[in-house]
Length: 92
Image (cartoon, rainbow, N blue to C red; front, side):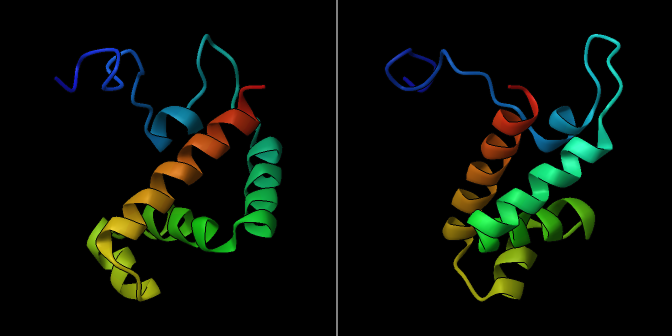
């Protein structure tokens, strides 16, 4: 059921490591990544905090939720939103 097109099965799941790694032999533009993170922090500060805690501090989803005093489900939603937002910014 989840793999059906209606259930979102046509979409590919992209993790932050795939966003941050160069593809097609392109070098990662660290300046573009920094600018995207800065823009995310200005527009969605709590989502940027989730990225920083998960990706840079290496916290788990549960640890991130506890650190920000939010539920695990909210942390998961913010994590998914921030990854998609950054992907969109870096792959325009």
